[in-house]
Image (cartoon, rainbow, N blue to C red; front, side, top):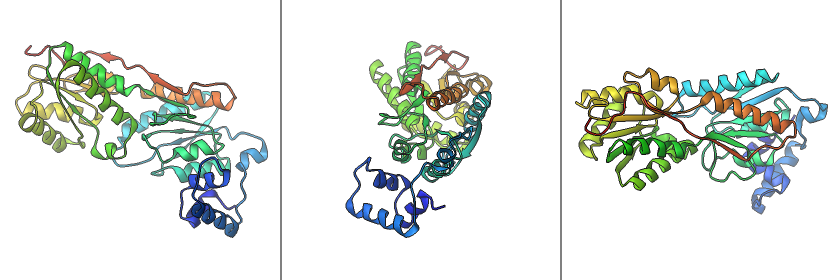
Length: 335
């Protein structure tokens, strides 16, 4: 059976462009439309809704799009995947994992073949290239993450902007006047990943509201990267008395790096993080943190998708409010 991805490859466009050219749901240039139509004729492509619609039965399978891209932290991906599988099995559904980088092709294939009844999409970018296909195809979807334009989509996520603000509010309340954000790896920001960008927005807005001197730096993972960013902050930038970390595997290496540079946590430097609660609690100095509720997000996504499949109304965007748990890594300035 000829697939939409075959047509896209022949025409030299994305599957979503093929979908738009055939459905007329978005404006497509005449030249592109002609290429798509020529490819359709050459390959003998016929539009339909795949095996599911032909048989009239559901597959009882949910697809989970988890692109394996640079900067992805596998333990967090695993937490999301396990929570989705657990919630899906509780509703008598299996889970099909889609790991291709951009995800257009995998989602298109699932749509055409009826392999899954719906799809949960992770690692959402502000201008995500998968959105045109998700909006135009017949496959119901839920995004764990919120793009810049969320109209017509179902999204759920932690309110990362509020999480960044919450960490800064806590540090300002302790009397700190200089604060730094050690963020995700550079490639995460280059992709304009929604959660990372929104946390920076919240951090910056709260620092401005409190009149704090601030800096935000991306950072890779590992001890060398932690040492380099700690040295840069202390020697070349603003020498902060407080740091917010949004890079889960960097929490322990960063504490170690600051200690090697003579900065005790929390005696000389208060440190907060936005990360899963078990990571914060198990750090060499237990870290005050706004928890990333991976299990709850996965379960919420499954719940929303099952409701969509049943025809029940669902909200457009659901943002979970962050909760800050104080631990041993923060103290009043000069304490």
